[in-house]
Length: 142
Image (tube, rainbow, N blue to C red; front, side, top):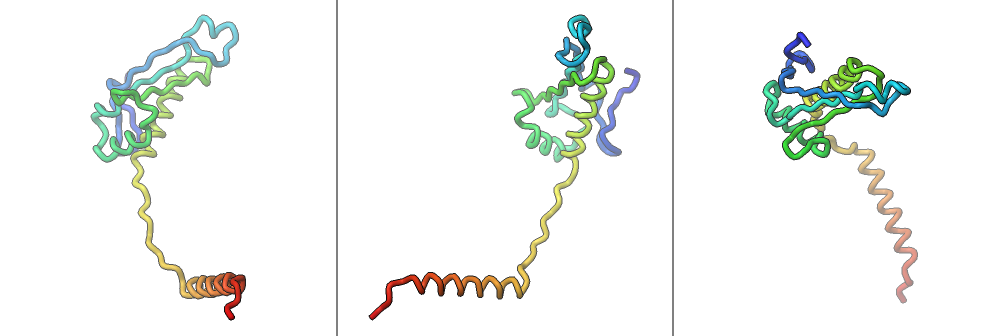
């Protein structure tokens, strides 16, 4: 590849020197050709040692991708959807781009809201009605 960086968005870029792509025999489509050609792409990327990510994005990635990471913080992405190496490699890079882009998004802050006056009144009347129903089931006092 002639490119040296891989852009996730305008701000985040990943160096291709951090990414390791290997190819193995695929179990996907291809007929007898599957037995001869290494078309399955495996992408390895170490999230912990990534240079182009901020600390916040790294933490979000580690939290979201926890089960997908191995012990040393390495992410393994595989693709065997297509019959050729180039398209499988691009599919792996697209998966990586999507995961990092999702982790880079800031979570929306929740706006605190209060129930409206009518809802509070409705809850009170329902509570009174329920209490009266329970009270009616009690044994009468003489």
